[in-house]
Image 1 (tube, rainbow, N blue to C red):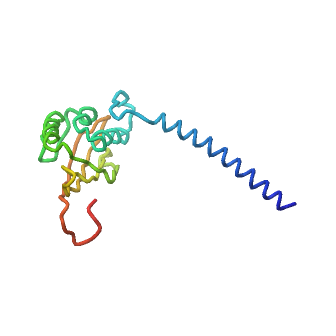
Image 2 (cartoon, one colour):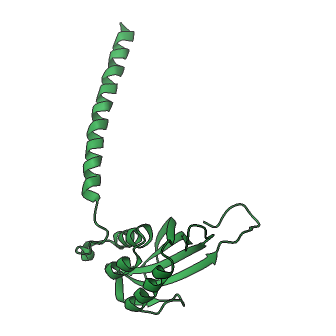
Length: 175
């Protein structure tokens, strides 16, 4: 009799777990659907966290390879640029990006990791580590872009760029 009770209890637990899993799955699906946002939607900029601003920018700029769109939507007009290959200010950088895209229509930005933190003044900094390739056959470069985010905008940028060599003294890889 005890064996039957244990078996019945196990069956009841399995059915309950299955029912909970279905309900939890449906709830998760509904949450995911509600969480889907257009990464170009800046209408709620004031309510977004610095991380949400960064995630939307990263989606458009790096993942969708829509550099100019990402800049227009998420970069402040008074953007401070530390990369010597671009002028300071959003519009000047957009001009450089437009020419860069025209020269490299097959370029890719394969994001490997994103790190969120703060500086000594408590301002949000975001580091995006990615593999940049101008064309599919290109070895590319390991790049880390560092952004400061404030009030719903990317406001400052630094870049560290290192070409990927043919030979390495280790097998760890750069990206």
